[in-house]
Structures are given as C-alpha cells and as structure tokens.
Image 1 (tube, rainbow, N blue to C red):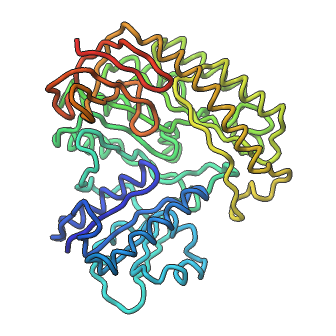
Image 2 (image 1 turned 30 degrees about the vertical axis):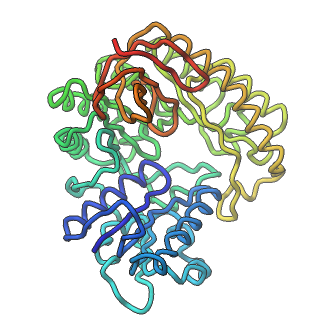
Image 3 (image 1 turned 180 degrees about the vertical axis):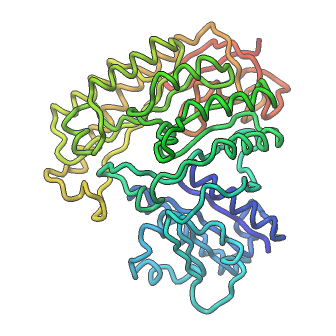
Length: 443
C-alpha cells in the first residue's frame, strides 16, 4: 500500500513514527509524502496538553476527508491522544472514520493495524510499561536527513502534578547504553550529522538501573561518534534540574562533539509554586545549577521552559519568576500557559487562574525574553561557528543552525552565500544579531 504518516508532538513521538515507517517499509509498503494519494494514512498523535489534543483531532478530521476526496482506505490513529482517552467511549464514537486505534506501547503492531479489514475498528492498548527497552535497535526511516533523535529511556517515574506522561508512557525504563551507542553508529552510517539524545528527563537516565548515570551515556556515545565522524554533533534535551550534575557538565567539556547546550525545563522559580507542581527543587537550587554551568562552561547556551498561570500562582509569585528569568538571562526560553484537565492532580488545586490573566503573564515573559535573547545573540557577532545547513529559501541565502540552536524550538542562522550543500557543516562568521536569529557570512 501507499502510506502517508503525520507525526505530531515531541521528539519522542517522532522516534516512534520513524520506527513505524521502518516496519511498514520492511513489510513491503511504500511511504509517500502527500496524503491525497495514500491508500492508508497514519496520524501519530500528541495528547499532552489541551491545545495538542485539539490539534490532533483537527488533523484526524482533515485526513479523514481523503477517504472521500483521495485514495485513502485505512485511517489509523496512534499515540498519546488515544492512549489518554482510551477508556472514554466518546472517543471512538466521535471518530467513526478511524479504522484502527493504537496506544503508545503498540507502535510495533502498525503493520497489522494497516492491513486489518474488519468491520469494527482495530484497537490495541497494551500497558505502557509492557513496552521493552531491551529489544535490538530497529531500522528507522528518518524524517530529517541529517538530524536524528535517540531515546535513552521510555516513560517517567516522577509525579509532577500538571503532567500526564507517566500514565501515557509508563514508569521510566532506561535503555542499555550499548544499544544507544549502536543506534548512534547506525545513524552516522546513514549520513546523519547531528544526533540528539532525548527522553522525558534525559539526566534521570539510570535511576531505575541502580548505578548507571547519564554522563556515562554522553561519554560513551561521544566516543563512538568520534570514531565514526569527528565532525558530527551530539546534543541532549529535556534534562531535569535535580539530576543535571557536574559530571554531565564535565562530560560536555571533555568531548568536543557534545554541544555546549543545556535544555533545562524549570517550569517555575518560586518555591511555593514548585512545591504545588511536584518539582523537588527550590529557587536556590536553580540559581546554584545555572551558576555552576556558567562557571564551568562559560560559552554554554541555556534553554528553559516555564509554565505561567498554574493554580494558585499569585502576582508576587509570577513576578518572582520574571525576575529570575531576567537574572539568569537564558539564551532560549519557551512559555506555556497552564493546561487543565480533570485527569491531572493539579486540577484539584484551588485558585485556578483566569485564562486572560495567564495569557497576559505569558506575553509579559515573552516580551522580557525577546530583549534578553537579542542581548545574548549580540555576543556572537564577530565570532565564527560551525553551522549545519538545512534550507535554501532564496538565492544567496541559506538557513542553518549552530551548536547552540536546537531544531524547531530555537532561532536559526541565516548564511549569505552560494553553492552550499544541504546537510553540510560550514564555518560562518556572525555579522548580525536579532531577537531570536543571527546571520553571517561564510569564512
């Protein structure tokens, strides 16, 4: 069959989508890039927050139209949205166009879901914890030619009150480091130039294994990459402030292939809000952590995400968060307004914040961060950096990323040049800095 897959949500979901594509190709199917010609359409959904759930439903309904206007015979929905609402009878009733529903632990059954021709929807919802992390490295069909993600673990064993991930993905299960290194090696053999380690909390790696730690994963993966391709980058995302320690920072310093880039979602910076969120650290802990990173790795880029409008957040507590952001001066920062749902522990907290006030706080943080980001970007002017070339939107202009710019979430680097190859690493001297982006010329 000709198959089209739409992957929504985070990088962990993207890896699952690539695994499904690999299995479908191995089974003899053809992957195409436009849904109108597809005989089967798969949507791998996100259901983490309400906006993501709504986006997923909108995409499902949009793709369902191709059963009438296109060649679609099978519509398959997988991932977090259906896992979250699998016990809600309204889910299947409201989406009669869907022929198969697969939970987060069922992506290995995608071939059966596509070929099943029963009169009732094909459904499979194994317990999330049943998904093994010890299986051999699977052949993946990558969405991006030169950048690829590797999951170092599945699930999460923390209990943040605003988060549904442990229910959707199960407890944390760390993958054997040997499998991670093997996967990195195979990706480099495919020509990948940037490998990104990902998980719900990457630096929590090994807490379930009784001894292993994330810095070991970094060091062993970086060593394997140096043997294969000394120019390739290794990046890691989604660290946890409680487990990002000096050993990780030193591993970054000791391996030139590891990007000096620390993605540390703090969620908030006021002790009382952090406590209500179930985050086991304080503002003082955060101040110490970021001071240590800047002291040990002065050129490091810092990224974080925060939540505003959490139940009970007072004006004083919000202003405390704003002050903290201005003091630390993150290179990159994302802001979410609190997303409520009845299946979250935080739903039961008192003093929920009006949506209008939460949005105002969101805009205030973003306005402050725009000034900080422009200031941080200005320090790059006059310096030369390696840039991974990714786009050529017009003649004489290319778009790429430096080691301190992660894909999708950060700004980009504009390169004024001609004749560059997509996926190449080039040296660029930065000449201009903007709020979120920078620009430069080939050296």
